[in-house]
Structures are given as C-alpha cells and as structure tokens.
Amino acid sequence: MNGIKNNVLIDLNGNGYTNGKCTNGTIYHQDDDIYTYDTLNQIAKFFLDRTKVRPKIGIICGSGLGAIAEMLEDVDKFPYSSIPNFPVSTVEGHAGQMLFGYLDNVPVMCMQGRFHYYEGYPLAKCSMPIRVMKLVGVTHLIATNAAGGLNPSYKVGDIVIVKDHINIMGFAGNNPLQGPNDTRFGPRFPPMNKAYDRKLIEYAMEIAEEMGMKDEVHEGVYTCLGGPNYETVAELKMLKILGVDAVGMSTVHEVITARHCDITAFAFSIITNKCVTEYESMEEANHDEVVDVGKRRQSILSVLVCKMVTKINDAAL
Ligand SMILES: O=P(O)(O)O[C@H]1O[C@H](CO)[C@@H](O)[C@H]1O
Image (cartoon, rainbow, N blue to C red):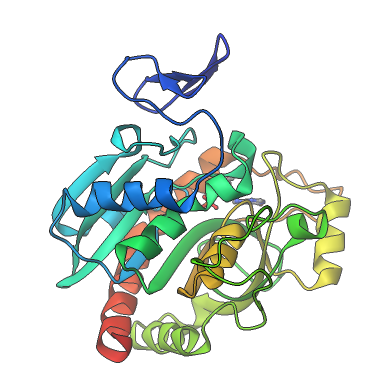
C-alpha cells in the first residue's frame, strides 16, 4: 500500500510520514526540503560507514526497471526509509531502496526507485540523491526511465538513448538548481549543451549493434513534464513540433544536477507506450502498462546497463 491516508504519506512498506516524522517512531526526516552540503555529506557518510563498496558509477532504475538492481552482487541494501533525511518512494514500480554492490566486478550504487515532482517533492529534493552520489565518489551516472514514444518511428519496447533533453519545467521557472548556489557542487550558471556524454552514447550504440538490437535502439530527445497526468493530444502535438521524441516525468532534473556537479551523464528510455496524437484513437496511456512493458524488457536492459558499466569502467576510470 502507498499514497496518502488521513494526510499521512504512506510508503511502499506501509510506513507513514507526517511533518517529517516516520510514524513508526524510529526514523526522523528533516522537516524542510533544503538539503545543505552538510546534510548531504551526512547521508553520504551514512553509506560509506555501512558498506565497503566504493562506487564510481551511479545507476537509477526507471518504472518497472528494478531488475537492473537485482543483478548486483555482494550487495548492501538500504531502504529509503532507513536512510536519514531521505525521501521515500510512493510510486508503483519503484521499490524504494539504495543498493551498493558490483556489476561485473565494477563497484556501483543503484537507486531502485526514484523521486518524481508529482509525488509532491520539489525538484531539488527529487534529484538530491545525485549530490549524495557525488559525495560518495561517483563520476558517471546511468539514468533509465520509462517514456511515451512521440517519434512515430518508435515501437513499444524500443530503447531511446537520450542525446539531449528539453527542460520544459525549466521554461516555467522550475529547476533543481533554483535557490542559493553552493559552489562546492558547481557553478551558478552551468552549461548544458553537452549534457549527455557523446562518448557514452557511442558506447551504447556499439553495444546495441553487438547485441543485434540496432533496429530497436534510437538516439532521441527526451522531455520531462511535471505529471502525474499523461498528456493531451494538443500538448503532444506541440512537443512534436518542438523536436521531442520521448516523453516522461523524470531524468531531466537528475541530469541537470549531475552535470552541475560534473558527473558525466548517460540516460536511456524504454518506450512503454506510444503517445496518442490523434483524437480518434481509442488508446489511453496507463501506468500498469508502463510497468508491464518495463518488466518485459528489463532483462535486455539489464544486459545493456551491465555492458555500459564495463565499458565505462574500462575506458574512463
Ligand atoms: O521516469 P520513470 O520513473 O521511469 O517513470 C515514468 O513512468 C511514470 C508514468 O507511467 C512516470 O513516473 C514516468 O516518469
């Protein structure tokens, strides 16, 4: 069970949170949404004190893509509710735990579940785990997500390597870097024209070719909307004109936060549904289908992530 009951936020484990306090009485979360350098450092230290794994690569599992985390070996698991000052996952398909372990002998940390704006968290809070990754020692981010396919050539189940994004929420003045800038993370005005590392995109395309999946893998432009509703026909028509290929409700704020603190970013989407751009269509997007398609494709995506981790480790670290 999860959601909100009697004004209390309930996580996937049935724990309630009110006014920053877990109702089981043992775990306390800070009352405000400001994550100072010190608070983030304390969270990083919490992990480093409890695991021997020293990751250079951070992974985020998208909706229905939790199996990526299940490939880790020699794992230390931290449910989000056990981590001081950490938000909790409230969305189906996001288990809500941080894992430290090894993928093909490469040390990684992996979020099995991410935070979305529509859950009620400000963008800076949604992406604060990226800064924790940075303080733990991560240099490379692999973010995965489920997305609607707007590019008409995409099929359900295809993979889109994100080559760029359009920060639509940013157009409306909502950005994870809003507020006072702490230069220990990065500059006030970070560039974003090379947000997605070109070399990592090339690795992913090479891997897709080796795996005989070239026809199912594309390079595309992703956008994040606030959600939680899926888009209207008119909105999708507009996004198409803007050059968007895949539509979701995540990743952009994570990548902006990663680039701000100089983490190299790579992201891919699994197309879980085709965006409905005709009023006559009988199709309607729904989250069960999103999670189902994610689950059906997660084993192949897990192999892709594993191969990416090996390539990044061999080449860059
Ligand atoms: O981006 P992820 O977390 O994979 O999830 C996607 O799937 C959900 C909608 O079905 C939204 O949360 C959207 O962002």
